[in-house]
Length: 321
Image 1 (cartoon, rainbow, N blue to C red):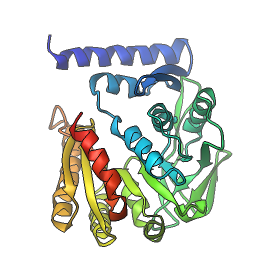
Image 2 (image 1 turned 90 degrees about the horizontal axis):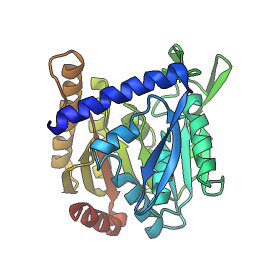
Image 3 (image 1 turned 90 degrees about the vertical axis):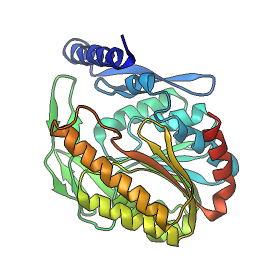
């Protein structure tokens, strides 16, 4: 039996296990994430797929903790910002790889925050090493539409209505604060990681002045769900050329390297075309026109010229693995 069918059987088993957990056991399960020579236990929602994906895609989310570790070694006095911290898997994976920089972990969802706090505590993280900021990072506008999905006690799942975010919002007694990167009062940031399921480009678009000051390495996910987001990505990517970000690496969503090297306007065109293609792939897949997707999204790392030494070390690690 080939690997594709084994993976589908494994996925079916995981789906059955998820339903069983929700009905009969509890609203969370335990998973393990690996470091260089060690591993850590996390708790996560029962429908979390991280361990399943990493089982079949060995490079999925592999390179992010590696570059976080490198950033902490190159720039030990600078912080790392993790927007979209989720259950804390990126923070803990970075620690397993040796990262000792202070991390600011930002997460808006009350559902994920409870897992984030528990995972940080059980893995000996405190406020000095990892500062949790509860809120949503907004981009160019104070008013955006945001849908919050909140899982209940394991059996039920409710969706809160879309709402307009101003300075803060309150719905069902849940308060979610609006945050801009300047509100963090951090001017020395070695690496900015963004993973917000389609909103990354808007965050970068609204952070241009802060980027001019901090000049971090940017690690972002290019998943888009609208054509507008694709246009914003194109605008942001061209803008990073003008800010003298001159090296890049593009990974597919399973951690394989697609492109790397000098970052210029010609390369922006190629990257933008790939991002647009991923949107079409997703639409065709969801409509049933395709049985699979070439790539759901891409991860892109952008390096300013003054952090070129780290880029060289990182790309050597990537090419040799």
